Image (cartoon, rainbow, N blue to C red):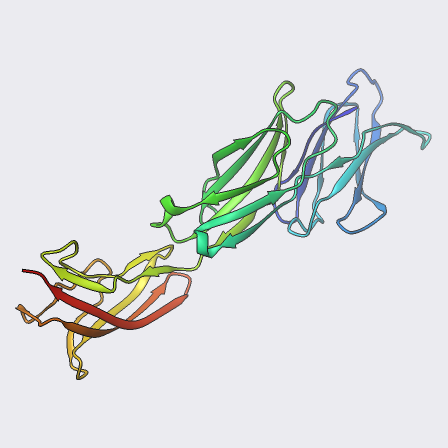
Length: 278
């Protein structure tokens, strides 16, 4: 009897599949035993009757975000004797950390163990937002267990990314999928410090990344506190004028408030310098 799959399909359910001798004429009891994370002992989970072949069992009492689970399945005959069993299988456990200053997520996972043949490939799957479709974004050899997912090309997304790792044994079609990990980058706001006429930026606006903006307010003031310009449009840019008249070179205070669909609020205040080149 050999393992085909040991996957974490939800935070509370694991699916276990083994291949057993299909030539048996009488059904046997297949018992599923589990060792929980940070525990030393195996405990009985459940059992089914089967005559062999591909046998699938479910464990619906796990906590998939806690750690790596270990399983074995044993076959019991009508006399109550254990006549067959699998080696211990260890599920893939994935964890992650947001690296805000690097605009990336650091991921690490444990190796799957239990197949007769070694792993041949591991695949990182990523989805945009919780519930999004998971797609392959990177693949690794059998002995790689960490990866930094750089997300500079995803700054237009809301900033929530969900991951799984799938271990594969390509020669036999065996797979094992990890728990789901979702990480959220906080909204990132870049505010230029100057507006340069006849220079590289004739208009001025903040840039927002990793936020689906639902509320936006940007105000620019004179040195005496009079409002010069205001907008609630994240795509609007200030051209350094007031009522169409170009303002003199100076530092102008601004306030910025952004709220995204998750209710996260970012507030900024500072000064933007207006520079006029001939």
